[in-house]
Amino acid sequence: MTEQSYDVVVVGAGFAGLYALHKFRDQLGLSVAVVELAGDVGGTWYWNRYPGARCDIESFNYSYSFSEELQQEWVWSERFAGQPEILRYLNHVAARFDLRRDIRFGTRVESATFENDGWTIGTSDGATLRAQFLVSGVGNQSLAKQPDFVGLDDFAGDVYYTSAWPHEGVDFTGKRVAVIGTGASGTQVIPVVAEQAAHLTVFQRTPNYAMPIGNGPLDYELQSQLKSNYAALRARSRSSFSGIPYTQAQPSAVAVSPAERRATFEARWSQGGFKLFLDSYQDLFFDPAASEAVAEFIREKIGERVDDPEVAALLTPTDHLFGTKRPPLETNYYEAFNRPNVTLVDLHKNALQRFTSTGIQTEQGSYEFDAVVLAIGFDAISGPLQQLGIRGREGRALTEHWVEGPRTYLGLGVHGFPNLFLITGPQSPAVLYNGPLAIEDHVDWIADSIEHLRANGLRTIEATAEAESDWIEQTLAIADQTLLPRTDSWYMGANIPGKPRVCMVYLGGAPQYREVCAQVADDNYRGFQLS
Ligand code: N01
Figure 1 (cartoon, rainbow, N blue to C red):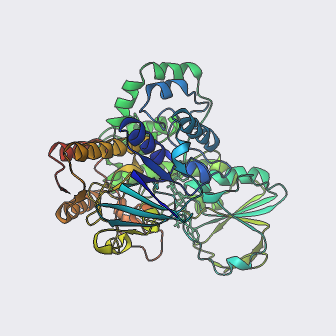
Figure 2: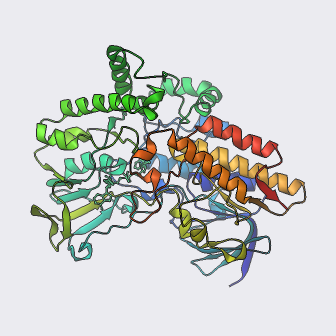
Figure 3: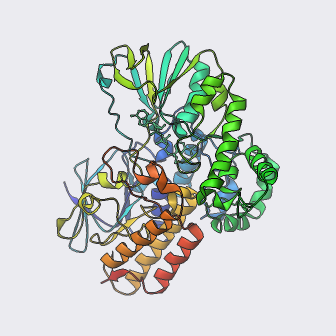
């Protein structure tokens, strides 16, 4: 097969890959190929089509800001868009900017090797692509966690993964269904399946601090008003820690009276979204007493919403601090457990032993099912990048460089891997930030650095070993000031057996991070070697 040459090869056609293609091709005039495993655009919103899938950041915030025309013309129907609407939006973007013609769908990157100042990329369709730059837009939650349940293959019923839901949908009417997993995906799928299935059994390992999303139709007038000064809204988003235009966070939950604290919690709870999590008190992430105060508030709410006190107790988290696992946002989640056709099994007290041909065997009994839904999460942040067969200078594998956890400089570059750019890579703030805006920041920074190289007749850019080590040290030092490392979570790689347990997120906040990235560029790409 012939070799095709490009300036840039981008991996993935989700929010990241689509904007990267538009930016590099249409604004920088580069030749670009995007390689995408899925049959169409959308990334996470292409695969995660389970019933109830919905973004937990407001639609008018969780969208691109790079084109004023695009943000003016698109009309969101709900405050929090569902998966089908977000996928329609990304299809609109792909059509509007004529992106599909440069995307190779249904194609997997199998190898990527740095040689002769560029990358040689081998794909599953047998093609070899050459590119000066390799840009990853693979996302942070795109590699499903592999189930390790004994006997899963023996189960004669249907097995569905929330992360790869059938396009034709699934009808659970009259079926006995199990859901395993109560993270963000499980919390969304459970109430919807509960309404349809004859019986739903939820297998829960760790209860979560779920909060009401507060979804509803998005008032057209409000939307028009927001759009009338979208630039100001985006500026407020970009100046906040989370990339959502929240401005009400007060310094300390423990410095105020219990009555005042409670009033704040109640107000944020009823406003929905991540208001309680990200816009009530700044010390929730640093002070165990503050975290416990909000935890206790949510525990009370769970008690009020669940009829059976024993079920409520099982659904009430007590083993981890609020916010140290990503809290899910829900619609009727707790009420689902009041339904006569829903049973909760606590895997801590009644461990799952194996699947059988008819269902699930636990320590205390056996359950029969027609279908099982696995909502067990992802090999997050570093996992998807390690699937690409990337080899840098002297043939060193990325998997080898990352054997003790991911190593990056700014979450953008990796020592030993010149001209490899990561969009929202490990050790960037992306997973605690509004995705589309985090992506735009990174793509714009990468585009500027490519232009800088070209303008100066340079061929390669590579993070130095010192800069990479310093960045990791800084990232870990900041993480250690927060409560996050105290809990086993996907932020820490601790949801995957055998994965190194290390904080993979820059927790200094996006404004500070953006400042550092800008200073690095201004300072002639300090910490990168250009040649
Ligand atoms: O995955 P998770 P997710 N036996 O890892 C359980 C984003 N997202 O897909 O906590 C039994 O959070 C596991 O139990 P435990 C968002 O960033 C966003 O739900 O490990 N149970 C947990 O309950 C989110 O945080 C949106 O004890 C097992 C669950 O499975 C991230 O993706 C929607 C198990 C996994 O929860 C991941 O969310 C969806 C086992 N062997 C996702 N293994 C929105 O925008 C795992 N579990 C709304």
